[in-house]
Length: 105
Length: 130
Image 1 (cartoon, rainbow over the protein chains, first blue to last red):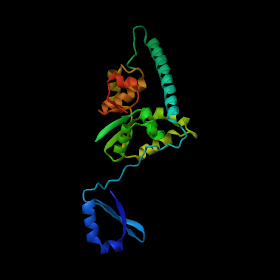
Image 2 (image 1 turned 180 degrees about the horizontal axis):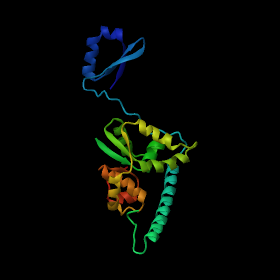
Image 3 (image 1 turned 120 degrees about the vertical axis):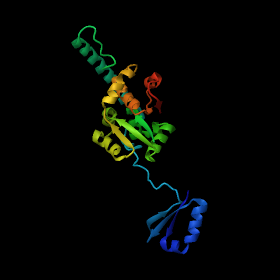
Image 4 (image 1 turned 90 degrees about the vertical axis):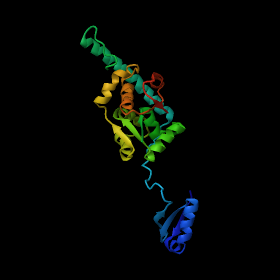
């Protein structure tokens, strides 16, 4: 869909033509006043909700590669498992023979 | 509106290295940005994401990581609650507790989990996307 800028004075003079173009082509116009955007004219039914603030690549310039991310998380996963197993052993010892903490812990 | 739960790899790739996302992954984020989907980030994922922030040059703090998530209306940070804890026993086939907690969020939200984790995918206990 195209988006054209049109000064407000020109829009006054060409209103019928602009509206016909919007109807036929689905074009969007930005009305300007002294060169600055003032308002938008969009086809009826166009969602007026804007996009949400993007989180995609929020830290893309942080100097960390995909491989480094994978490596950091794999290392953490190994540590997590070691901690988990140590804690399960400790709990089993404290709870006494026959106690199992697997699945609960 | 569809809901997707993000695991730590998914959140880290979205924030730090979106090139590693698949076309589907990018489409899910784009859909969320258009308010057509909600992204749920378990608080435990934030704890793990801290490790990724520490690897950045210069390091990125947890507060910095959380800020854009708080500002994005389509992202919901979800604390671990009783509902998730009650779902844990059904996830015993998943070896690591932290993975079980993240999967529990997917179950309680009745939502797919965005993850690359093969063990979770193969368990069939939660729907996964990547």
